[in-house]
Length: 270
Image 1: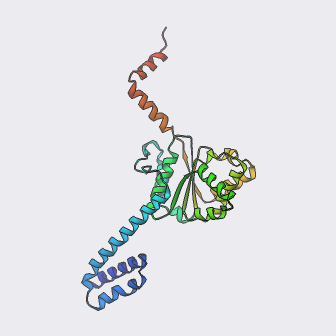
Image 2: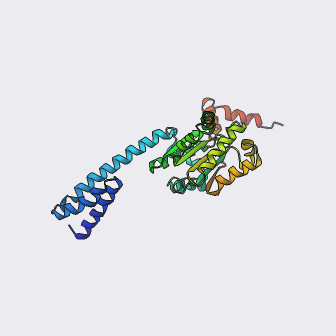
Image 3: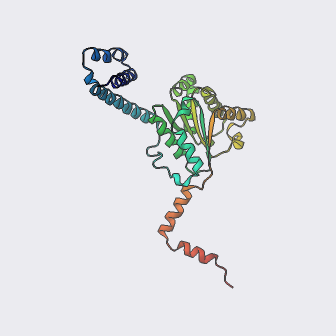
């Protein structure tokens, strides 16, 4: 074995052992094998270590996926990307790499109901989990109710610390919060606690100019938007509702003559 090949295998073995948190083995295993003339075993040892690392990664991803509550099957593989503008698809592809989570940045997804916002958010969540980050997907109204219950029990700080364990918090449909003052308060507190520390992904059918319907107070609305936008990527789903299109296609399949009758109805006769 060439010296440069041996050193490459030694370096790779050491990195793997450190990743596996076997620091003593990382310092001792390679040099001892080399010293005793067992360098021919390097490829075999390295292969076993890589198998162990992959199995650990798979187990971790499965644990993270179970804890995430992400909708099963709502991934990029099932997202109809052909319906989306190419620049939007490119943004989604870039975000799926997960670098923004490392930077505690946010993603804000806007669009009318039925355009695929929640599916895209879930797909991003699945991709982030695959990269080893912890994710929690939840309807906003449900999380707000849980935080309200924690506040009534004088346990809000503990609940916020628990949420802080997640690298990414996906709040689906923020526009459906009931807007009672105490609900607004806990929602704003959550956003303030995560600001520049942990990432938030929000889907909303309300544009920013309508967020006063959520937060009521103009100053609170401005403060919430300011925190979210400061480090964020904004995705706008300006596409037709896929639910409406799906329902229309289903109706056409069940009644093939519908389209021709509609044309006859609009025909102008002298």
